[in-house]
Image (cartoon, rainbow, N blue to C red; front, side, top):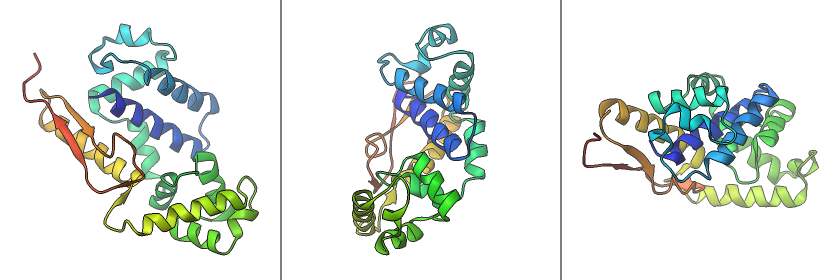
Amino acid sequence: MENDDITRILKFTAKLMEIHDENEFKIKSFYSAVFNLEKISDDIAEMSSEQRNKIEGVGKGILAKLDEIIATHTLAELDILLDKTPKGIIDLLSVKGLGPSKVKSLWREHKIENIKSLKLACEEGVLASLKGFGEKTQSAILQELLFAETQQDKWLFSVAERVSLEIEKSLNLLFPNYKIASIGQIARAETTISGLSFLVETQKLK
């Protein structure tokens, strides 16, 4: 499992925790771990638990999450969060300019819970009137949505990311002795994804 895959799972989990008002300190620990892990050039999955525990920002709680991700290629906590998050909310997370706090506000306070209702709010000038947004943000988001409409044969990143993680998990279960990683558009975190690519090593690990 590549470092990018590990940090992506942690970051995605943290975003959903933020939307669902999970423990603030726990969320910060996830983001702090991601920040530090993204600076690691060594293969995190190949490290021992003791070595991973020495990485800045990796305490006992995060270490347990890393061990779980490396062993199962997912997090049970992430699966639970996904089950209680509407698909439309996950789609909103993929819109440039909308972080978890803004998505939570749109969903909980203003009943904007999918791309269609977000676009309507932009077109009617409603988004600009909401706290934390404004005309500039509304215009940028609307342009982002209009661009996405021209990419109808592609997925939004958030949707493609979820599918990619599921496929990678299945591949790792089918071929436990091979090293598999997501590459291409997913690895580059492009806004829209036209296809999923995976790198599989050709020699078995010793």
